Image (cartoon, rainbow, N blue to C red):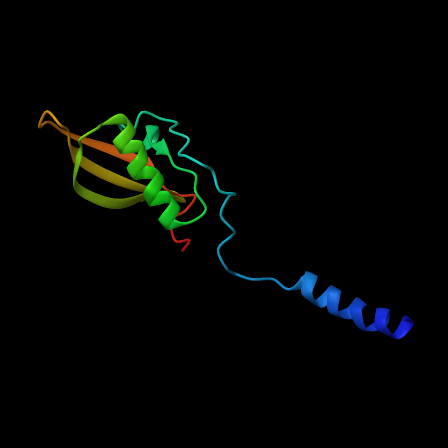
Length: 112
């Protein structure tokens, strides 16, 4: 039994001390976007908190459909400010007007 513990201790220490320059893990999954912010600018972006890009994109589309039924996406572009990433989306509303919205996608950007 003692030899088993002697073997595991160095293994546990080496595994615990390993470091990585990889991107930190994303936050835990949420069931829906937080919706904080009005989306009128980068400084007031709509916050989407999801663990990966697929979930983040679904949450963003759901937010748009919930707030602008019948919308059509015209254009999307990525931008950043400091260490935050933003998706800038231009949509056409059901009445034909265009609207540009800013989404903070930092939580899931680059996580597949």
